[in-house]
Image 1 (cartoon, rainbow, N blue to C red):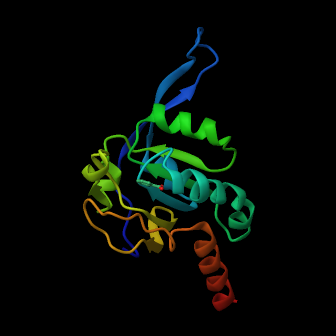
Image 2 (spheres, rainbow, N blue to C red; image 1 turned 180 degrees about the horizontal axis):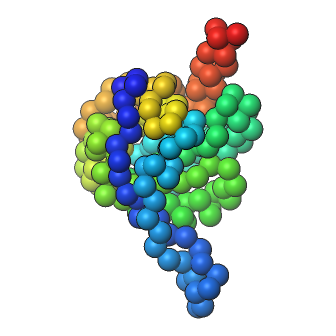
Image 3 (cartoon, rainbow, N blue to C red; image 1 turned 120 degrees about the vertical axis):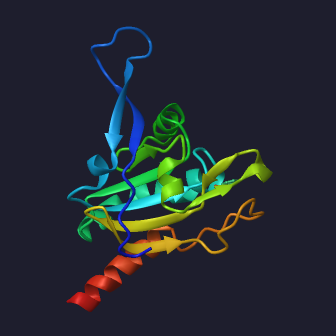
Length: 180
Ligand code: BEZ
């Protein structure tokens, strides 16, 4: 996976637009892979679903808290992607009070499929979702890869360890020490 270029995909996001009156002042805004990845060094983490327990209790809030430490390691953005639509991702971001981590809705699973990370989660009634992984991506090219063990359809567990923010930070810091 190292040195793989991220797939070119268009994401259908919903953004707030104050010029729209009424109770739902949001409009569609297409964002491309280039919009998110070109000319930036980012951490992308991908998880099985918005609002799920491990993601909501540990992974997303911990990335949010550690944002400045990632910045100190030369990371410009932290993105969380999930095979969920923009309405769900926005509601999750609001519930989490996010200020730092940006959410990417991969509702149709196209990005996740082209990354080779789409798995069936029919055992949970989820349909097709992302296997849990994270990556450091520099100008659209994968520089470091953190994939949870046991990639499989209908996995009866949800491994979480290598894609934690703590582990990725440790690797970034160790890389810096080696380079120094
Ligand atoms: C969790 O994040 O805990 C979780 C993810 C997918 C399915 C069930 C739980």
